[in-house]
Length: 143
Image (tube, rainbow, N blue to C red; front, side, top):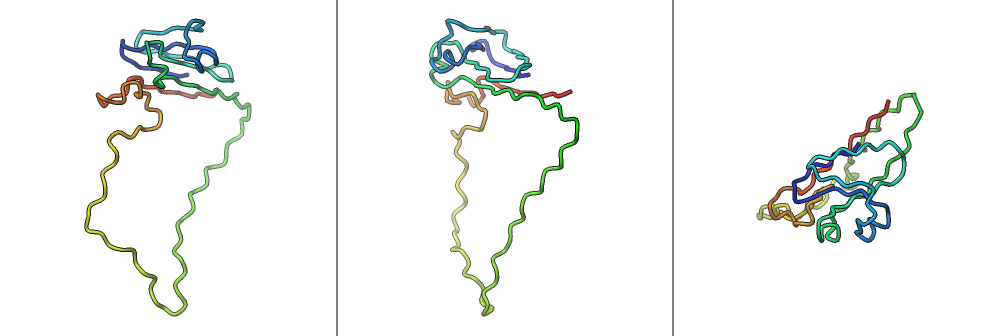
């Protein structure tokens, strides 16, 4: 299931692929404006959602969800492999140490305050308030 949480200034409109590509809501599949919308993702295939408020979709407030078919495999998956460990370069044969990188007394640069995190749907307002406009949570549950 997908859970959308949003303020009354926004809505969630499910559209077909053409509506998604052109930001057209004339042939909407469903319209939601309660502030918390739960969409059950029961069939595999793409699903398309846009904000129907003036200009929001055109500014990027839209989402494509690709629902994968559920696997009937009842076996257990192998545990994920551990990430490779970094290795040190071999020492020079004459025993000399490799040159060290230049030292800087300046502090590291702070992270970009305007950088978007993955899944941040706040691009319609460019994060002026520092709060995402819509929060999306996708919950996958397999029986």
